Amino acid sequence: RIIRFLMGDSVPVLAAVLDDSRVYVLPQRDFLELVREADERGISPLAVVQEAIADAQPIPQRMEELPLLVPVEAPEVWACGVTYERSRDARNYEATGGKLDVTTFYDKVYEAKRPEIFFKSTAARTVGPNRELYLRSDSNWQIPEPELGLVLASDGRILGYTVGNDMSCRDIEGENPLYLPQAKVWRGSCSIGPAIRLAETVDDPYAFQITCRISRNGTKVVEGTASTGQLKRRYDDLVAYLLRDNQIFDGTVLLTGTCIVPPDEFTLADGDRIEIEISGIGVLVNPVKSQAVKS
Ligand code: DO4
Ligand code: MG
Image (cartoon, rainbow, N blue to C red):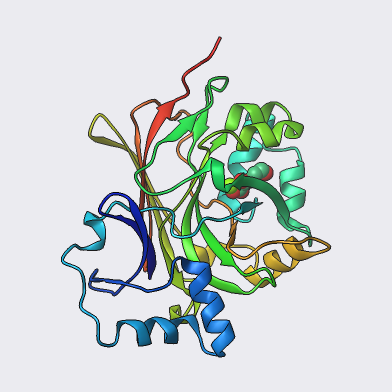
């Protein structure tokens, strides 16, 4: 796994993390430099890492003890929607007020050949591990969306996998689908991290276990688990649609849709703590904060 952290509380450093959580500092400045070096030398990013750490010693701290940064400064984050049954059913509930005998556009997009893909975030709006995610001040029904993120090269290659949170406002989206950008995009509405698992080290990317825990005042109030095996789509197909007549940039992250939705009566509150764990990648932890409302 690849991480970034602040060395001496000020210098961003790239590092490799082995399964036992030992951390090796890498000479490359960031993840994209590592990928570019691999491409130039015609070898894999894993081979570059193995070479760099062959004679190196791990630093004394374990990954969990480090001030982590976003593992890649993703220029853009895009997101797929309604790729899991659970997402379709939850959205039907918020759009119809529980009348499940009508066919909605969520039902249609779940079955359609073309997936839903929307623009989610920019580097400035995206936060890393342990950084505050913000709540919208004009929504009363907000949830995290735990999602597997694909870290992409500009040609669409899947370089690695990360954990993402597509924070969402169920009331704004449910009121009118045309409000989707406002239900999805605001300051601090997206987090990624804590690590990138290099694609070549993953045997089956449809076998990731995703767990989401939300705690309030130290007590767990929500817990849910799912598997990427329940995904309706294939990653390559999602990436192909993202790239159709579109330009993306190295390090773009594509979130693949949520498979866990908290109970309908739940909404996030100031001070909550969200943990999203994906097997083999790590735990993305973020505290939640209300926006300071400016009058
Ligand atoms: O249809 C709206 C957004 C869907 C989404 O974000 C998801 O399914 O994860
Ligand atoms: Mg989502």
